[in-house]
Amino acid sequence: MVSWQTTTASLLSRLTVKQLLQRDVSVDRLRGQIGAIERLFAEHPPGFEVAHDHPLPHCDAEWLRAKGARTDRVILHFPGGAYVARLPKMERSMLARLCTAANARARLVFYRLAPEHPFPAGHEDSLDAYRQLLDLGVAPRHIVISGISAGGGMALGVLLALRDRGLPLPAGAILMSPLTDLTDPHDGSRLSNAARDPVLSHKRGVEMRAMYVGGDTAKMTNPYVSPAFGDYAGLPPLFFQVGSTEILLDDSRRCAAMARAAGVRAECEVWQEMPHGWQGLPFGSESQRAIEHCADFIRECCP
Amino acid sequence: MNRRTNRHAEPRIDRSAAAERYMQSLREDHASLSRVLREIDAQQSLLQSAPGAARPVLAEALRYLLVYQHSIHHPREDRLFARVRAREPRLYRNMHSLVREHRIGQEVAERLAGELSRASLTRLRGKTGRDLARRLHGYVQHTRDHMRREEAVFYTGSERALRASDWKALLAGPTQRDPAADPQRFAARYPRLAERLARPQRDVVGPRDAPASADLTVRLEQAVERCGALLHQVIDFAQRVACASIRSTSRRP
Image (cartoon, rainbow over the protein chains, first blue to last red):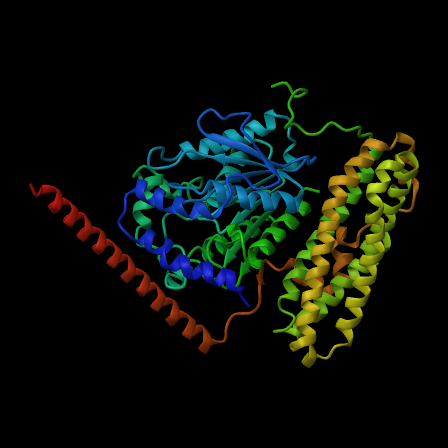
């Protein structure tokens, strides 16, 4: 049974966020209105320090860790927001809960956004962030990559690129409702869950995805853009979490199946009736439970 | 980049090969335990709706925890606690609640396993099932929190406090392997649990709604969405009217 808090969040999202994503508004207005959701969250998660040392060359990044904590594990996190917007306070709040549960610290990477900076700008920023961790002396076996929504697609794209470039791979990856196929196949869950999804909508999907590739739709089948077209051989363990009513449900299922076919340990947790990005909700028992499951996975692949 | 002055580099602790080996074995125990806890948490959410399928998996998971984690892993940690107590009594004072929790955790797991096996399927579908599911979730939460505190306080403290001779003595103690490290042996002893852990996809938070109820839910959601769209159209219209009215007012002499 879904908690009343998550049910209410889904209802409100259906009345606001989904409507916003369906309407013909400018990117600036979209960012402004999505940013209004941030009022729900504190600037900094209580008990955590946010540090801005070790800047990246082209984008902002920050360290997040519990005050006084001492741990080897590092979560390298890529935020969501369809590659055009973001919710930094929500991402910080979710990451803080994940860090607490997994006894880890986090590096939050605000890769450059489209349409101002189309692919590969954000992808290169994310790779820079991983390489920087290695330069800082963090062992790959202590790094877990994570991402939510578009950030999940980014995380998978980064993993494929790391493998292709021969760089040491992290211990595992957590992919929360990842967007893995920008070609938008109009079948499967993209079609069957179109009405049920309380957050995402197709209506402006083509336009927003085109922004990420700078209008060059041929790039949409590039595995670093759409990891659903990638070869997963040699990747570390992958952990997918997705809601059963999401239009992105098949993005996770398909990639998890491809990874297993390539011999990679890949798990896919389908959470019944959960909305897109429920892990980020600061209330509702399902959000905390999902975070605890992610923390269990971190402990498993990063002992 | 200078790693010595970098506070985000890995914490520097004295890690002899023996210490590394012993602590790694404890951390790997936690890794196996986390995997099973995740399954218990997924199964407890199905206990009331599908007790016939969830109970055998839960029973094996609890048996695994009792046999391996409580009988082998915790005694291994307790030996470490004892060494820390001898070397740094002050550090031990922060840890002794963790030792007590080992005993309490075992008692809770035994009690839950017993009640789970005794309850009829009918009772598991009712209040007994709801109560057991709640307590199983509580047990999982408590165990996760316990591991977290061990890693944050006890493990890092031990690595700092103990000497090479301590680690050698600890390694010379009894060493039994986690059955989860050997998939065939694990599947032979815990077949239902092993089958669940190997599943590529796992459903969490209860079963799907019944078809009739699901249909109603979809209709309600569509109605809400139409209301939302209408509401936004009304807001847009009101904004346009307000803007036009302000413009016409400002044009008046």
